[in-house]
Image (cartoon, rainbow, N blue to C red; front, side):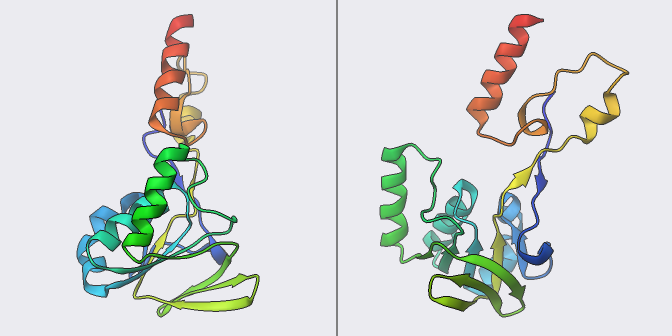
Length: 173
């Protein structure tokens, strides 16, 4: 069994989706809202955040990525990461690494970095803080069925990892 959808992980001070905060894993469903804003800040520079930033910058939005770690897209294959970084630069995406998001408001977000606090103005904030396992179905079926949890209900990861886990589980059944 796979967790159908991993749960969104709240970021700074419990930031939750609202009229100007959109979750990265579903940002495509909010295109009309984002299209009107023009200026977007992506809170989180992992794969989902970088993907959202690249797509939105390609649509003409002014995009900034704010990332806690010292670099973005650390989980990517090196050659793909090099290409991503080049494309983000070509599209004018501003990248702030080493910054902790401390607040989100109607005018953007505030983050603290090596130089102190900075406010990044934006009409839309894409929350790409990551996800956590969705264990609801596994727990509901526990004791009532022969359950083999895998995928996002165990650990949110890439599709290939979930497929491999499913294959390995099927081998022992």
